[in-house]
Image 1 (cartoon, rainbow, N blue to C red):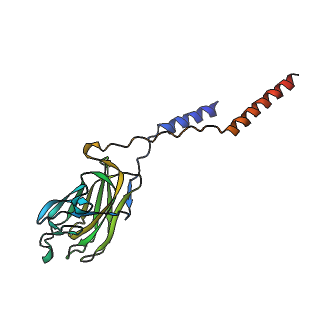
Image 2 (image 1 turned 90 degrees about the horizontal axis):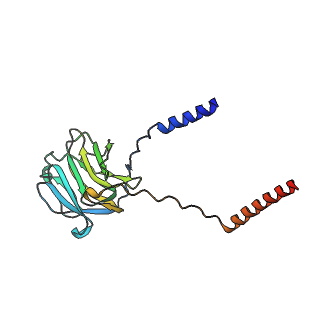
Image 3 (image 1 turned 135 degrees about the vertical axis):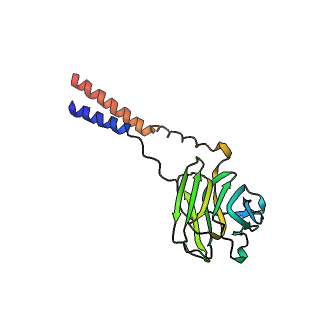
Length: 230
């Protein structure tokens, strides 16, 4: 009896332990395949783009720290006066889609010409307002394109906002070639709620042969009892 009570107590204690927090939902991965095309602007800190060509796709809002000149089309974002080497103020870019349906994102760029610290931080916020941080170090530069940097969801979470932040004392000479992967799941504004739980698995229906075997077994059991009584 003591062993049974101890086992039951251990089970209750295990059930009482809170579940471990969920793991991060995004990993580094370059799988995006749909381009973002910028709308024209000059010497601005906020501008827009569209997912897809000819300004027909969903709108995307961009906000920069430091004035920039975003080229029209699938081009690049440079600090104002970049032709003279840039003004060194372009240190952060925040990207906010108006329709939350991205499951992956990728980009590339260059660090400032005087940079010796080729690091950046990538902040990815999902539709439940949970932010995951990626610290990327030892990237190519300065004045050399660093390779595509991307993130992708591992469990169908969606990207609500992305922040690209240059390392301490650094700046961007340009950021460019933004691409996303569009998920079939969509949400907008405050309607970004968790998806409904999946339906329970269907109850298995016994096959006809299984029923026949079961019936035969029960009949045999009944006959054996009759023989014993006789």
